[in-house]
Length: 173
Image (cartoon, rainbow, N blue to C red):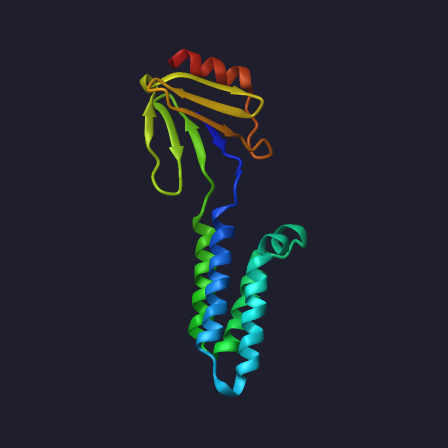
C-alpha cells in the first residue's frame, strides 16, 4: 500500500475559511455595535478586516500561530460586540476547521486507487486504469475513459521509491 499526500497548489481550504470567518466577524462588529462604543466597533471591524486580508502573510511570513490569531480575533470580536457567544463561535469554528480538514491524498492498494478528498473517497479498481506512473514527484493516473489526473506529491511528507512503485502498478494493470 502506498499513501501519497498531494501538494496543495491553490489556497488551502483552512486559509479560505479563516479569511471568511474574520470577514464575518468584522461584519458582526459593525452590525452589533452600540452607540457608546461606536468608534471602538469601527476600529475593531477594521482590524478584523485587515487581518482577514493579510491572514496568509501573518501565518506564513510572520509565523503567527493559527490559534493565537483566532484567540486575538475572538477577543477583538468580544470587545466590539460585548457578546461572548460570537467570540466562542469564532473559536469553535476555527478549531473545527483546523482539526477536521485534512489535505487530499491518494492511496494505492492491491484493490485499486482511493482518491481521498474533503467530500468522499471513491475506490477506483485497477481495471479502470490504463497506466499509473510516478516520475519526479508527479503522480499520473491515466484512466481507460481518457480521464487523466496528474498531481504533485509533497516530497517533504512522502518518500517513496519510484521504481518499486511503478513496478507495483505494472503488476496490476
